[in-house]
Length: 66
Image (tube, rainbow, N blue to C red; front, top):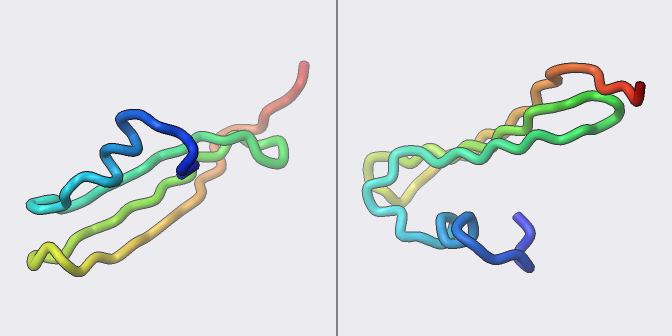
């Protein structure tokens, strides 16, 4: 996340995580002629302190300049 930006997304990342089970950020980006879906997920353990992060990139469709 670009820390120079402000708004509700920044507030969401800085919010208290008490009771949170999962957080997910999805970004769609054009990269190397492909539209890709980048997903970052944080799953919290039941104690609310430990977590596991996973990220994935899924190519969706070829982008052409036509």
